[in-house]
Image 1 (cartoon, rainbow, N blue to C red):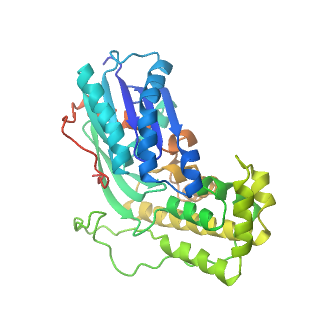
Image 2: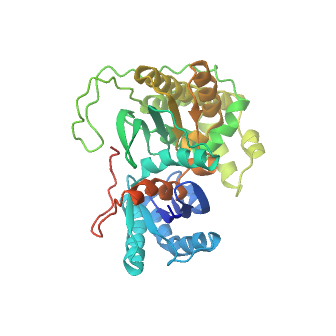
Image 3: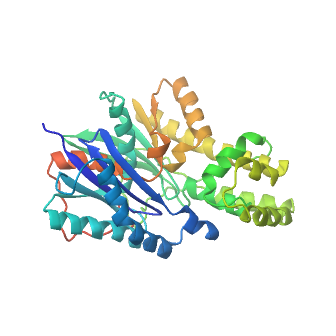
Length: 384
């Protein structure tokens, strides 16, 4: 079959991204315009600002992706875009532009679930390494700032099907990282900062109890009842550990030192590790290390328990939090003890990007599963 060049467009949150991927297995270009500087003063993503930044960036980012790939609009075989989940306004920017391109160029348009994109980021990396043999069943942990989900993935004809066997009841793991970093005056985004500081603290200094979920959660993010199955659930919860960090800060009277740190770091345009360390006492470093250890142990423990329960042959760990160094090391160590191969995307494909969207579109391209021009953004889109 001749090569198919697919342009992917991703605008679900705070990165405007475009990429060209050949036949679902070779990244020809991958361009990402970050909005970190825009949202940093607010300690998190501001939806209205995100939409505005996407409007500014979408055209130049797509043009750069085509130029880097040595492709033209007319040489593309299809256009893929994230439909959801994500911020509705941000999604609409990418979708509107993708629709306009597809209509003007008379090219197939493919709508992609952002979560499926993260799963296909792992497949894309493996195919680029020449690894086309995948052992099923596959369990995928998608863990990021907005999502913490466990999916059993199966290949059906050219496409894939997904069964959700676990999700967060409240906050996503990445959201907990960001909010704790903000609480401690460490800035945004919090995940990478905590990851860098944690090795300098004692991870056993503060004891965090694991979340106790006594009642089954039978409702998805839309309030709809999920399908009844005999399969056990492996849900997550991270609002409690955020509250535990807050209580620790209050009990140990850390507010004053946090405010001093926040003001000091605000005066540094691009803080380095030395700047963070110079403004963190040992108590703060121990708290950060203990917090990260608790999150990692919970993610790894529940995911491997699910893998054993479902007798899976391969484990994918993907999403922005999959770039965390301690998470990777722990999964590799614990997975090896279980004889379970654990596969990650590279760090550049862990965070939001458009290469994963173009890669996820390739099976749909082969199946001619194209979107109609009247589809819209779905901020709570489910993956099935």
